[in-house]
Image (cartoon, rainbow, N blue to C red; front, top):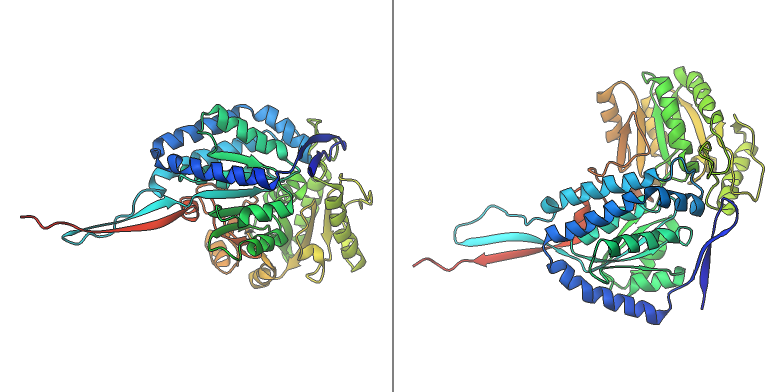
Length: 460
C-alpha cells in the first residue's frame, strides 16, 4: 500500500511514516462520521463546548512536548514552537465564547398571530485540509467552530506535520469526545480529491496554495457545497513619513523573517516614504543581521531551516533572478543550494517586474522600495494577485483608515503585522482565497440558515 514519510528538515531523519488511507477505509470513515454527526448535533451546545474546551486545555498543557514535535517536523526554532499552542488556546477560547451568540436563533420583528425565527443548523461533515507552516493554528480555525456548531470533522493534515493530526486525535479522545465525531486521515493528492468530492462531505476548509485551491474547486465542481479557501498572500507594508522608524523596522523584520518567512500573512514587500527610506533600511538590515540561523533545537537559534530544501531553493531562485535583473542584496548571498537552511535577505533596487515582488516567496526574503506619497504606495500595494493582509505604519490613525479603505485586502493593520485576532474575521480577496474563519462570522460558513414561519392558532 502506498504511503509517505515525514522527513525532518532539521537533520534529514524520518520523523513518522504511515500508509495512505485506502478507498475502503475512507468509505468506512465517512460512514462513521455521518452516523456520529446526528447525535453530536442534537447534544446541547453547552455540552459540546465542554468537550472542546477540555481538548483545547489538554493541547495547551502538552505545549512543550508538542513544541518539540513541531520543531522536528518543520524546523521552527524550539524557542518559539511551544507558543503556537498558546495561540491555539486563545483562538479556541474566543470561538467557544462566541458560539452561544453566533449559533443562537435570529428573531426578526414579530407580526401578530405569527412566530418566526431563523435557526442555524450544522452542515454535516466538514473536511479540514491543513498545511504544515502553522500546523495547529491553521487547523484550529476550522476544527473548533465546526465541531461547536454540531458538525463532525475529518482532518487531513499535511504529510510534513502528521504528528499534529495524532495530537488532535489523542486530545479529543482524552476529552471524552464521542467516537467518530472527529477523525483523522492520511491521503495523497488523489485521495484528498476523492475525500472532498464524496457525496457525504458537506463543507471543505482548505489552507494551502493557489494551485491547491483550484484543485479543490475542480473536485467540488459536481457538488453544491461551500468551501473556505485560504490560499496565501504577498502581503505588503507601507511605512509613512510620520512613522516611528525604529518601531516599524523592528516589527517588520519580525514580520518578514519569523518562522523563516513561512507565513501566509508574513511581510514579503515593503514600501517606505523616500524621506525616511535610508534610515528605515539601515535599521531593518541591523535587525536581520542579528538573526541566528542554525539548529532549531538549540534555544539560541532564531532562524531555523525551511520545511524543505526544495522550498528554500525556490526562494534562492527568486533572489538570484532579482539580482540578475538589477536588484541589490544587502546581506551576504546564500548560495547553499540543496539545503533547507537559508539565510535571510533584504533586497533593494527591486521592481514589480521581479517575481520576488509579485509571486509568493514563503521564505526569509523581503524587497523594499521607496515611494513618494500615499497614492504611489496604495497603487503598489494593490498591484498584486493576492489580498490577505496589508500593514500601515503611521502616527496618523485617520489617514491610515483612509488608506486602508483603498486597499484590496482582507485585513488592514496599523503599526503591527503578521497577527490574527480571533475576534476578527480572517478572510482574503483575489488569489488569497474566499470564505471566512474566526470571529462570529466564521460560524456562518459552517452552518446553514433554516427559517421557521409559524401561523399561530387563533385564540378563542
